[in-house]
Length: 257
Image (cartoon, rainbow, N blue to C red; front, side):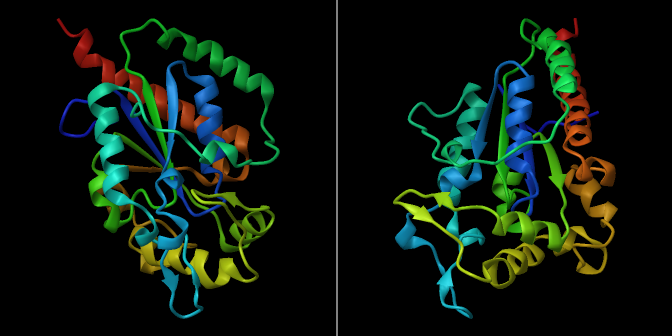
C-alpha cells in the first residue's frame, strides 16, 4: 500500500524524479492524459531568475542543475497550497509546458485502455492528482519538499543515455529568456550534480550500480524496474499500477463506515 504523508492532503501528490532526460516530463504528461482531474507542477517552474542562477566555480558557467538554482521556499509553498486546496496556486503559470519533450514511442492502444480503466476515478470519491516533475525531488537538500510528496517514483538512466538525450535538446525557456547548454555541459555540470545529490540512494554511491534498498524503503521511493526504463510503454504501465494502488489506498479511509 502507498502511504501518504502525516497530514491528510486534499490532493494525491505524486513525485517523478530522476536525472535530466530520464523521461520524467514525458511520463508526467502521459499520466495527466490518462487520469482524470490530474495536473502537473514542474520543479523547473521554480528556477530563480536567470541572473540569480549560481555559477559552477570550477568551470565558470551557470549551474542550472544544482539545488541553489531553485527557489525552494516558493516551491514548498506551492506544494503546501496543493495539499490544502487540491489545486495549483491561482497565480501559477507554467513556462515548462512551453518546452518540448520530442517524439514519444508508446503503444497508443495501451494508453486508450488505461484511459478507459482510469475513467472510474472521475466520479469516485477520489482526490485530484498532482504530479510533481523534478530532477531533485528526493535529495537530502530537498527534504522539506520531499516530505510533502505522497508517492515517490524514481527513474534511473545511465550516463550515456542521459548525455545523448540531453545534448539532443535545442534548449529551454527560462524566466527571462532562453538557455542552451554550452558544449560539455553534461560532463561538467549535469552528471556530476546528479551523482552528488543521489549517491546516497545507491550501493557504494555508484549511481549506475544497484540501489541501496534500505534507503529507498526508508524514504518510500518506488524505483522503476529496469524493463520499464527501457520502454516507455512498460514505464507507463508500471506508473499506472502504482498510481492506482495509491488511489485505492488514499480513498479507503473515506469509504470506511
